[in-house]
Length: 152
Image 1 (tube, rainbow, N blue to C red):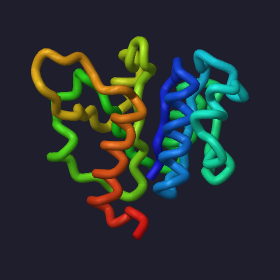
Image 2: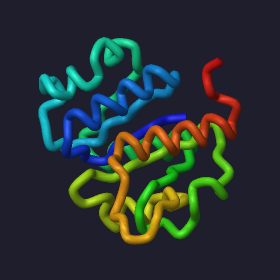
Image 3: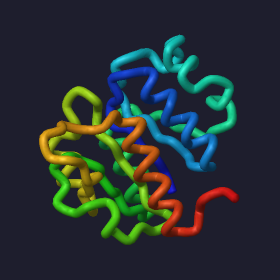
C-alpha cells in the first residue's frame, strides 16, 4: 500500500501524512510541484521525528509518478469529492496506491483519467470536504483493515 499526495499545498498536511505513513508502516509518495519547499520547517515540524521513520519518495511530476506506478503494475485509487463510489463499498488490494489531490484544487482531469478508481468519503450534505490529512488517515485505515495490513 502506498499513500500519495498530488502537488500538496500545505507543508503541515504533508508532514502529517508522513507521520501517518510512519505509524501505519506505509510508504508515502509526494508528487511535485509542492506549494512549499520539502525541507520547510512546518513540513518537518508536522512530521516530527516520525519523518525519519517513514519511507518516502518525491516525484518531479505526475507523469514521472504515474510511469513508475504503471511499471510496478499498481492500481491507482483517487480520492475525490467527485468520486461516484463510496470508500466503504470498495475492495482494496495490498498493492494499491491511494492518491489525494491538492488542498486548493483537488486533482486535474488528467489525474482523474489515469485513475483506476475514483472514491469519495461519505459526508453530510452541505459540507465541502475534509482536510486532506484526515481523509488520508480515514482511507488508509480502511484499506489496511480490508487487506490485513494494520499493525498490531
